[in-house]
Amino acid sequence: MSKMVVDCGICYDDYDSKDQVPCIGTCGHTICDRCRLSMTSSRCPHCNRKEAFAVKHVNKQLWDLIQFSNFVFGKNEEKSDVDMKQCSECHQPAKRLRICRDCCLNSGAAPKHLEVEEVSESEAKSICEKIRSQALCGDCIIDGEHFRHKTVNVDTFIDSYYSFLRNEK
Image 1 (tube, rainbow, N blue to C red):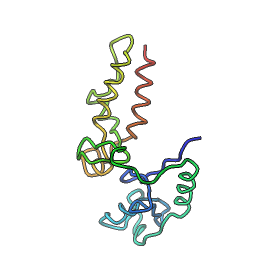
Image 2: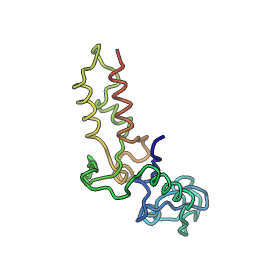
Image 3: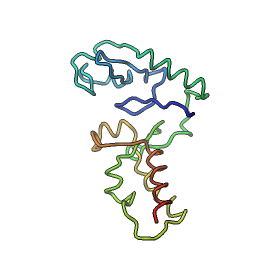
Image 4: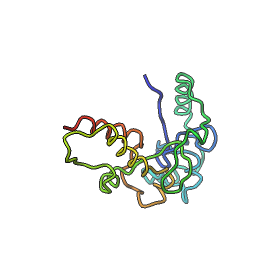
């Protein structure tokens, strides 16, 4: 069993008890309070329902589930800047970084096809570091050229791509 990871679908940051409190709209979608407050209208950013986030309603069920998961798995809500990686665009520390999958593959940072029979351990690690160097925070994805692109958690992408590199013959 592993720790439950729940993040805001807009900024991709984990929910917390400060400004990342999960808020539920009248449509049933949930976003963090920081994103709710920064929106120019109260329309749901997922389904576009009018006035869905006009009033703050904490998603209590989700919050209780997150708290329970944190208790069971011993997650400390405070994460130091030392533990956090930097966004490749704004260079700010972020709890969670993402990769624009298609842009990463199209840029050549993560080659789709390899000409060699086998990739060495050091070559695989080098490719994974190139991928990590393109990681972005949620704010840069939303405000930048990757808005509406398919993004994935950088660690998930690297784990999957590393397996691909080590198993391809």
